[in-house]
Amino acid sequence: MKAILVHPPQQPIRAVIRLAASKSESNRALIINALTDFQSELTNISEARDSQTMQRLLASTDPTADVIDAGTTMRFLTAYYALTGQSKRMTGTPRMCERPIGLLVDALRTLGARISYEQKEGYPPLLLEGFSYSGVAEVSLRGDVSSQYISALLMVAPTLPQGLTIRLEGEVGSRPYIEMTLQQMAQFGISYDANWNAKTIQVPAQSYQPTAYAIESDWSGASYWYSLVALADDAEVELLGLKKNSLQGDSAIVDIMSHLGVQSTFTDRGVLLQKTEAAPAIGWDFTDCPDLAQTVAVCCAMKNIYLSMTGVESLKIKETDRIYALQQELQKLGAELTEVEPNHRYEVKRVRETTPDQPASIHTYDDHRMAMAFAPAGMRAPVIIEEPGVVVKSYPGFWEDLGQVTTWEELQLS
Ligand SMILES: O=C(O)C1=C[C@@H](OP(=O)(O)O)[C@@H](O)[C@H](O)C1
Ligand SMILES: C=C(OP(=O)(O)O)C(=O)O
Image 1 (cartoon, rainbow, N blue to C red):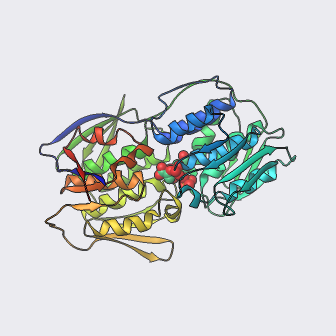
Image 2 (cartoon, protein in one colour):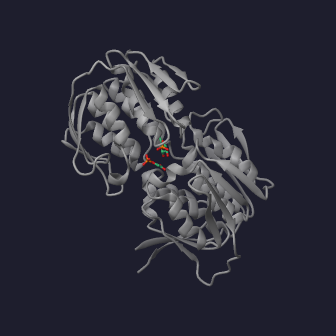
Image 3 (cartoon, rainbow, N blue to C red):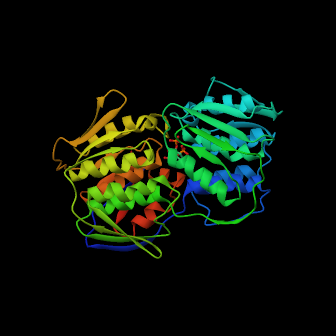
């Protein structure tokens, strides 16, 4: 098995990092561009495997679409292929076939899509076999499983003869991602009416207007740099390509990290991260920004900051069960993640000081965010990250970028 050993930096960190582009923004722009007959000019498209897969599949006439492990690619393409009447078999990794898609399929069937399950009801692989419009112009679906179903439906909504009204039921998780979708649609000329009190989003029938669109850098990727600055003794890092008024909900990392010892100053080309005082404890609701939970959990564990986490229910159905994975791996760093209120509130706290003879070896569970969230722990003591190649899902240049601030070496573990 391949692994990377991250060494603590030998000197103060001073770096300027050109951050990778957002895969979430890229995947939306790519779907919308497909709906404008590929007439838009997109720049700074993410090199993340999830976005490369989206591009490849949009250009492919192959009857099978294998999304690998990309959730947005699976959900967005299912809606796109269904509504454009394409016959496709949609599949992915074994883990992708454990990630639910039933709510989206139900909504698409209501609209007129012929979709069946090849194996397990509610999960990929899917067989898409055409579309005949049912005349239905309104669907209801739960908002607490994955916002990706809602984004997927929204992007195709303007192409339906009567547009679409989506009624959301229950709690709405990952709402900034839905807002990102709507704002990107607006950039391509779409008008809509979102009433968050009534939990209703109305999109009239209309045409996307081709436009030039530049993708912003990735705030989820930025979070690892924040953690690194929080954990290093002496660090100052400028991240290029990020905006203060971002479409991305993970820009919440600015606020979170102001409590964990990192201050942000926006420059005309990005954001400068500098060290500041940290609080002894924080509580955070990750409902709006679930992808930040791992970064923050590891950072708090390493800094001995008590963390109370809520809004993390969706972590169990992502690339891996991220709650379980964090529980297992934080232990190796002397910390515990415990469920305090069943399926609602969790806490992370340091339970012992570790002065191990051997660096902790962190298992990454085929999850890019496990690798990148634990790598900054190497600012304090050497740490081994197993299967480091997982980062390609969202941030292929992660290790190269990390090499600008500290040394790491490749290992071959048995
Ligand atoms: O729409 C998107 O781009 C995403 C939405 C979120 O998923 P959920 O809505 O399933 O929480 C997030 O975790 C994922 O990384 C990207
Ligand atoms: C959950 C993620 O991605 P997806 O759901 O698109 O696979 C992620 O990138 O953390």
